Length: 223
Image (cartoon, rainbow, N blue to C red; front, side, top):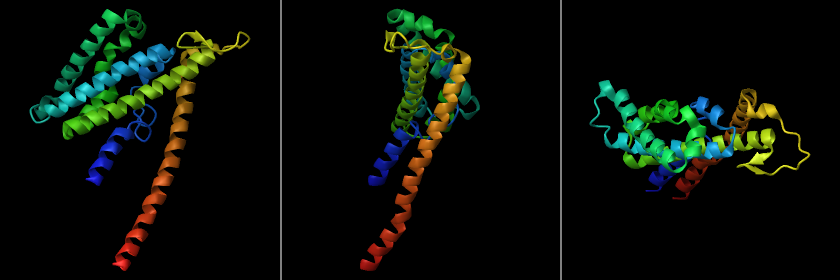
């Protein structure tokens, strides 16, 4: 039972740092670079992306034994497109300004490499619960990444956060941060930070596991 719980937690947390879809797997970078000019856009994209990813993972896991292997990719795209259409209709009806700001990148979620990749590599091979947890973890990882990038770019490039002026009037904004070069610079720095954090976490895990055989040996001698 304990091993099963650890496994579920691992599935949920892998997408945040260790297998972060943007910073570690380097997927979905097109939308990441494009929508991070403002925090509001990043939050909206992150929520929409997570909803589509979780729902499509669940649906594909439910139908994994029904979908023929020869047409699995077209079937995945149809399923994902259905949930993307729902998101588009809801956004257009209730948050039209966000719908307009995201533009073409909202419907392009259909062919996002992260969603298609998780469908192909995980959802079609695992249970509904595991697939849902994987979708949630990957969605959180994606959302945190785009919100962090948008925060850095909006503060440095505009002096605002979520549209509110937070920097003093004398603050000199860095205009390049709101443009493509600033997006790539921010993206590269966050990738380096993620690698550094991962190395630190792996070092701790290895030390813990490395002590385990000695502990087991001692327990065996005591018995």
